[in-house]
Image (tube, rainbow, N blue to C red; front, side, top):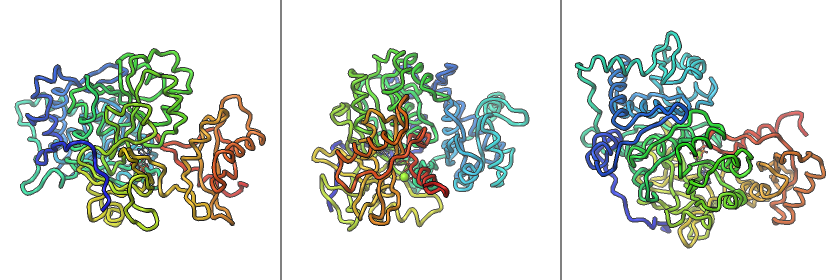
Length: 551
Ligand code: ATP
Ligand code: MG
């Protein structure tokens, strides 16, 4: 078997404790018991500056867990869904649920009633926590699936007739003499790899989001893997990306506790709010997604902020074009750059750059396998294992690989093989140095006369053209070739969408690529659809492209 191995030594991952015990109880891991780790950090609201340190988080989560058990019948194994933008109360609720042996589920605050109904049904939600602004959608969806309105609570804010979790926690505080619920522990004969504590939806880029079952061990392992790659210095992070996504769960909710570093929550994303917070909190490393990085290099508003304290940018979740990377380096020459590559099913990272590679030289790669992780690359047609520099499907095995999909044995068996490898659905290769190069997703490859054309390759090229602000490439039906690439293009401000511009772009691709990769059509559009986690939603454009009445 051709296996790709991590260059890093193994990390020790405890297998007998829950994430709660690991973060708040365990003498060997919790910052609450480690005096050498300095004053306690915590979750901070970037706007209001409201702050909860780890001791307060522990107290509040204990109270909330107790209240959920006593007043809402919450039991181990129950799912609690969080349907909210970023707030410091989100991780408090998350900790309360895992403290009680439940399953935390995050749902995108952008979901409409139909999407939320699907989410609640798939996750088997018993209690739903939300914000006043999302209450209408939450209630409508809860009604559809039979979750009573009395089991819908607010994380913060007030609405008549609804309770918020601060009320529940305060009541607990008053009744202090009463015993609090004890933390749930891993049952005898099991390890923390056998217990699902998190139900995380995949982004739904290629279809309906899948409810990925993550164990307590998955989360703990990923945090230990990331710590090994952490640059020296005090950890402090700005939670720009949404908390419901796996990156948010790991990077903004769990890892800061383990690292005893502040996690600053950005309640609503705008470029201005992000830039202000970066300066105000002197954030040195940013974990971002490509669409935000594109705005960092192109948006004029950025010039009004002094970002000389920023040490590095980190990108993940979707491919980033070499053009954008080089513009980023030009604009911020003092910074480093890194990527993380992985999926919800791998509790975020399969690969990442170690500090030795926080450098623009390696920026187009997804980094190296994280500790305790092995990979294989399978030929797309024969399924044969391939060696370095050979392109195929990336598959990975390690303690961060998920347990499977909830109640979906068919999808689980298709994605996780008997040897324990997660089949990512991504096409790429490892080079001689062990750096992964991701080309595109199998599902999105355009097949021209049987040859694979990764749309991301053509998007990269077009993004480098002076007339192009943003773009998306997809395959359209072609009688002769099966499929041919078509580009949806957002032009730079001030450029007129004329036929001549379209011809210029077609010619540009012809000059740079082999014939079968040539784009056959350019359509101008105001914007290309992206998910809140920064993914290009080509499937939405595909549907649009096939709408009746279009040429
Ligand atoms: P769904 O599985 O529901 O269609 P999704 O795969 O987009 O959605 P996630 O689990 O959030 O949901 O994303 C994982 C995918 O994101 C990976 O399989 C890969 O295609 C892409 N990805 C993540 N990191 C990177 C990266 N650094 N470079 C390129 N692609 C990346
Ligand atoms: Mg996926």
